[in-house]
Image 1 (cartoon, rainbow, N blue to C red):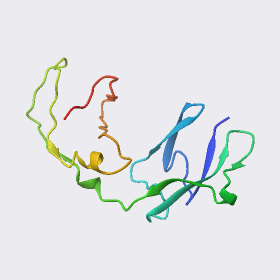
Image 2 (cartoon, helix red, strand yellow):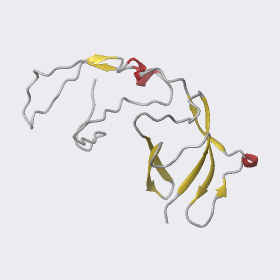
Image 3 (tube, rainbow, N blue to C red):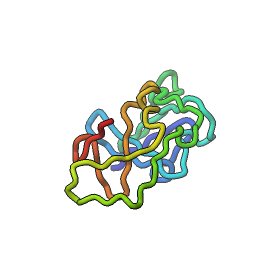
Length: 136
């Protein structure tokens, strides 16, 4: 069967987020376009209250309120990250480097728990060493 999660405030799988189970101990949730991690739109804790892996919903205790899995921050509208358009830049398919210019890339390095910048490409490039790496 399909795994389902119950959050507070509530989120709906495949409406608010998509989920991929990565291993027996890890799952990845990806926010869908134009959705928010807290359905009330407010900053504050996102709690996981129940997990149902097919045998019924199990309470994720701390006395029934669930556990805080993230502290959702105020949306800073792109966090000041911009990439400069370069429509006249031509490169070969096998070019070893592509330079992306812009501003705010260092934001991810200076905010705790954000980690290094991650890029999302329309053509499915994966990064993290799979088919490219990021250098500064």
